[in-house]
Length: 191
Ligand code: AMP
Image (tube, rainbow, N blue to C red; front, side, top):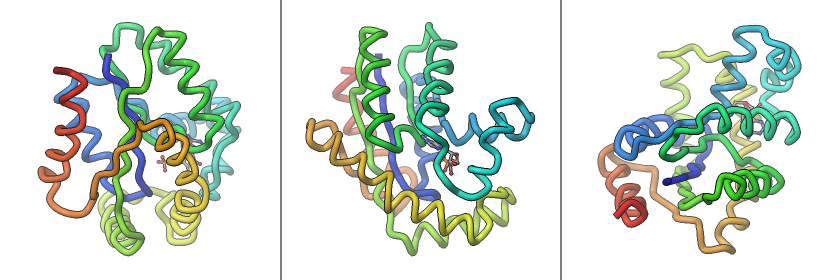
């Protein structure tokens, strides 16, 4: 198995690089943001509980998020690996993810941080807003989501760094060049 976590602020290019990783390494993509968006769009019980929190660009509670993630992992017992995107965002979530991987007799093999400046992130999101019209990309919410990343999510990075599991990749530049950096990190795990 090859299990990866990808980190980066909104608009860092996680979606683009994730698609390429999924294809090359045959991974099951689990994006907690996409899952929450699916639930709100389909007005499920869970969707109703998290809609306002998401609309405000705040983080959903660890309990709800971890339970949803665990369910999604358990739905895919045949997966040859997972790519976690948007999760973990807190140290409690990171610890829960390790426990979940251990229960499946596996582990997180690589944690990749896509490093992008705030200025570049804002430019990219403005473009995405035009193309996709995502509600949570509205300006005030976007500010909160970016702030959320730089104030809170980044605190998960030292958790992985301290264990020697964190790799930082420059997220600025050509898509294929960024992916080449990611490949050089991951290929050693599949050799
Ligand atoms: P994203 O597309 O990953 O930025 O996620 C969109 C929204 O979903 C976030 O602003 C949060 O409200 C919620 N969300 C996604 N992943 C998590 C997580 N790991 N923990 C808490 N809330 C999350």
